Image (cartoon, rainbow over all chains, first blue to last red; front, side):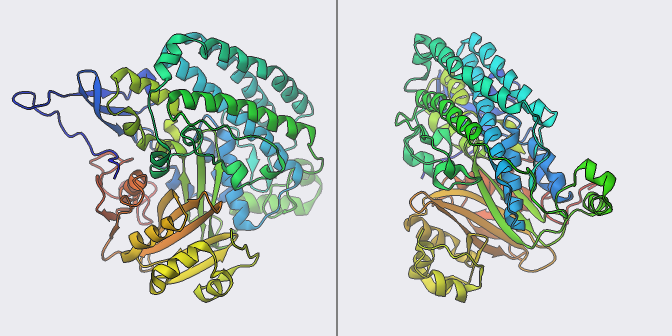
Amino acid sequence: MLDVGTPIVQAPSAEGSKDQHMVLNMGPQHPSTHGVLRLVLEIDGEIVVRLYPEIGYLHTGIEKTCESKFYQQVVPLTDRVDYLGPLANNLCYCLAVEKLLGLEIPERAVWIRVLLTELTRLNSHLIWLGTHAMDIGALTVFLYTFREREDILRIFEAVSGQRMMTSYFRIGGLAMEPPLDLFDRIQAFIKTFPEKIDEYSNLLTGNPIFRNRLMGVGYLSAEDAIALAVTGPNMRASGIDWDLRRDMPYSSYEKFQFDIPVSTRGDCWGRYEVRLREMRESIKIIQQALDGMPGGPVKADAPKIILPDREKMKTEMEALIHHFKIVTEGFNVPAGEVYQGIESGHGQMGYYVVSDGTAKPYRVHMRYPSFATLQALETMCKGRMLADVVAVIGSIDIVLGEIDR
Amino acid sequence: MAEAPNETLAGKQAVLEKMANHPAVAALLAWSADNLTGALYDRGELTLTVPSESIVGALTAIRDAGYNAFEDVTAVDWLPSEPRFQLSYHIVSHQYKERIRIKTWVSSNDLAIQSITPVWPGANYYEREVFDLFGIRFEGHPNLRRILMPEEWIGHPLRKDYPVEGYR
């Protein structure tokens, strides 16, 4: 059985013992820990003997907070969990509640959701690439990726008015029709973006320092990846060909043609390759979504669930009543439980929503990929040099906001 | 996936009639038909209920039947009803491209259940989270300590009798 994280209680005494190990505390303020991750390392010289992650520094009790909010009030909370991929959170929660309600979403809303979720994936991968390269010492790439990320954030701002905490997907569709020039802007962005990926690749792929720091480091076998519940690009870099977008499609992903990049290397380099290729696949999906974008409404026809347009409220009594009811009392959701899984930038995200028939969720559980990925950190780092820990943390792409929730 | 009925199948009898060939149902029946105490097929999701004593056996049978990837375990507090806590295990099959939910109940008299870390080591953090936030003990867990809350914290925040605001 794999040993996952038995705590390192105290440093073994050096005198007279056969091992002269040292306990080293890394984080929570260490720049390479991507937030507030604390690692307790037991090291023998420079070799990592054991590694124990201490988490919970960002725990805000979002799941508890959800239980005292109306269903529609939970949407903005979900943004703050995985703050690098806000729209993926929105999508997962909305799909779960829509499943409970049995609500059909207009096609246009579904396609715009796919379009923006893929942009979110690019956003998430760009931050991963920039910070990962920076951890290794290639500082320039960070500036390049943040330049493109800025373009994506401007697109998010155009649709939702917010750069990061978008809350653009709502239960039953979208918050509003996107601005007229949105699709042109996205088209212009993805037209130049493949060249930008080449640019990152030129900076890193042939770079001997980058190659040596990544190749053969942080190996995770396919069996361990499954056993430790590792998902997403980290799992695919270990040779498992599995992606929820293709294998258990949601939100009309079955209508899009794209490949799932898989690498059998299992090391940090494999994870780098997989994510870089994933960005190109996302562009394909975005292009298809732009080309085939259907017309029609962006909100489902369910006046008791979806807030009416402002214009209607000024002219129709019905709309005003519905608005008042939704805001003050929420809407009742039929009793039951659903689990909705999606493929976010980091792996398999899941929302488990339990309803008792009232307007507030009885329980919302959020399954986030980084939480499971962190368990595999010790397996990847054991017996390696201390400096490799930094490379591995960068390559598994964890976000502490979604680990601690 | 063997078959996917569109309607809701409530209760063990209905599921057994319509979905007896479903790999997960068949595996549990072959393992121990008595231990399958309930079943529900609702909104495209299959839920199978087993007694809490036999959770490890049930999940081992499910895993050997092709449901290879553990995804999630969490609890729901149904205060004041008894048994109070519901545990939901979500397991994905890469082979059948399907997710199932194994459900079990833990009573507040004896808040303990066998840990499934021998079956999937990846359940480690998830069980620690349930222990931390609900106070359910997992027997045989390698390191059952608080994970999200501080070590010295008193109480289990996700229980329904834990206040949302004010002094504890």
